[in-house]
Image (tube, rainbow over all chains, first blue to last red; front, top):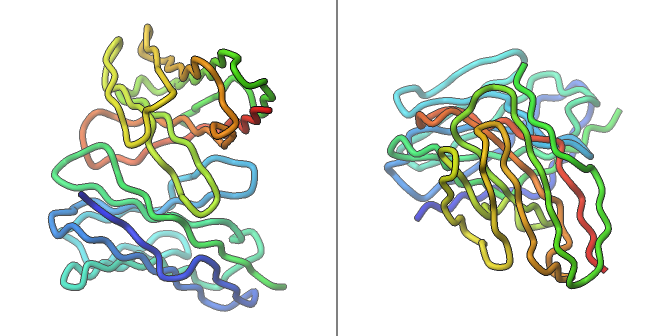
Length: 112
Length: 113
């Protein structure tokens, strides 16, 4: 089965810096990758996704990079703001499955 | 906007009680899921359903059951609550076609004493 891991359980950054949250997965057949943000007291919220036919996808202040060779993806947040403080989860699915495997989450702490 | 609602934000129950957690989604999604979330363990799938009256076990189904009588509603049942079921419970829904994100409810914080 799939296993999904995050490199750091906690990441502290200064307001205005760029943040990078990393995620590794094990199944080379994985083809759909999602990042979620979970604020305190709320359920996870979709941020951005990427499919295996792409290496990079950009949203508003966020970029997801996918490296299929080393089975690694990252979420980059530009000009991090206090409102970005949350737990970030990557989720990975394969073979058209609608059931993703979640990583354990990285807590992003933004210092003013 | 997709909305997934859960019947309670906080619940306190006693050991041995039967507990019902309700989830409703308004996007006509085929799939619905129940997860529990514990510190350091991430999200673990308890049960999911891909259609009315259909259910499949997830990774940790023991001690739980589910019911899906209507497409928009998915219930999680703890037949006899135990203290190790104290957790945050999250409901989610998605379209049946793979490669689509899940939409989550706000969660129910259940404490079993």
